[in-house]
Length: 129
Image 1 (cartoon, rainbow, N blue to C red):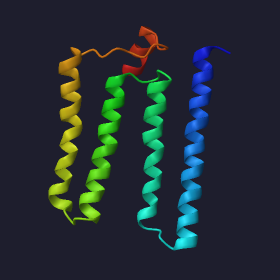
Image 2 (image 1 turned 45 degrees about the horizontal axis):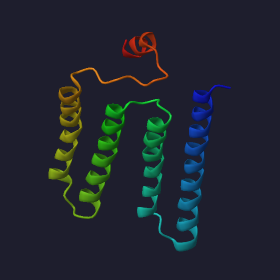
Image 3 (image 1 turned 90 degrees about the vertical axis):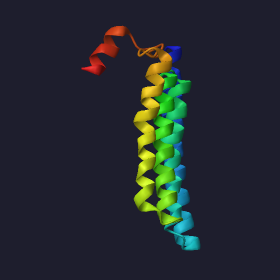
Image 4 (image 1 turned 120 degrees about the horizontal axis):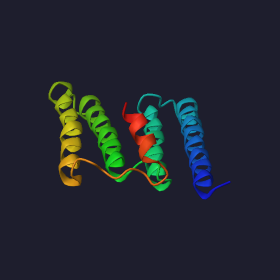
């Protein structure tokens, strides 16, 4: 088993564990404390941990990770503004941060961000098609 394969296996196990723990926490808090509504937010930990694992295992480059984190952050901010502040209408404007971030990343990386170490140029071309 190669080093990259081991890192991918460990990363997959970590993501699976976070998904399992998120589900357990959701069910425990829901049934024991009867707090179902805001507790579903624990499931946001899954894509956050997945983005971190992808960076650590070199499956995703830094530009892709930043885009993913900004996307998750926008969704969290939108839900916060909607549910807590009742600002659903102007709140949707936060989603403009996603394409703006993507454009800034292209500007600062020269349009071609580095691909992950364990991905060949032909694999990258296949994914883009």
